[in-house]
Length: 267
Ligand SMILES: [Zn+2]
Ligand SMILES: [Zn+2]
Image (tube, rainbow, N blue to C red; front, side, top):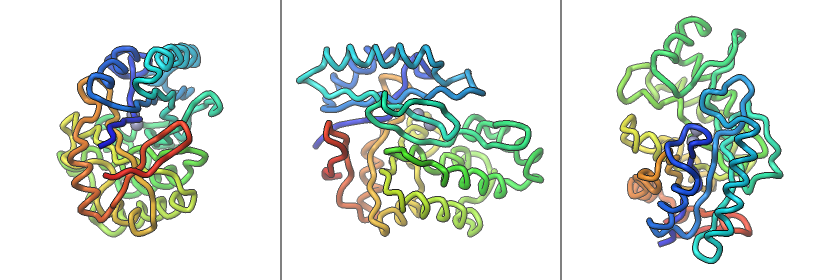
């Protein structure tokens, strides 16, 4: 079975380990390919994104690691770009497009930081209606363009298992998710099955939810496993759960990234 992972962070953004430590851990775990995806520079948020200088350092560190691991493990220099990030895509091997903020008239608010921030944002800017906030989130998701991989499609559900913010089974929520999904599927990106919240103990299942994966499968969409590792310990974490989920939905294959692009492999 091919072991690979293309969603990882380092100390240059909000990760806990250096790029060298992450690569060494990936190699020790038997990966044949490993991708870095630091948070892209986002002008209004310096709290966890890379600055423009950090980004240059990041690319230079990964260039060195590519040489160091040549012939042993393929290394890719990706970027997790937020919808509102600024970047030159030519500098990166691939782009993961994600939405981490809800844009309002008063600025940008975290979509996946704490349940309290979400609740307060809904109260102040969406008339207390969490589903209206979710609709804004999915409108933004539908704007992700020119990206290779869609990151944690439904991260807005991050706290739903532990906090009753809204019901992700209700028809209004599902309609918003499907509307964004149908727009994205027409652009044919790869959707990640992201196990990051499982490793952090906030969710029992990967993103996206089963009903979304089912729609991706029915429309012939492609999927990739992502750990969203913020430390060496969580590289490849919970991929067995992702595998079981995909098989139960009907998927026969996933993709991995190679130097010539995405390649289909068995789940
Ligand atoms: Zn993210
Ligand atoms: Zn990430």
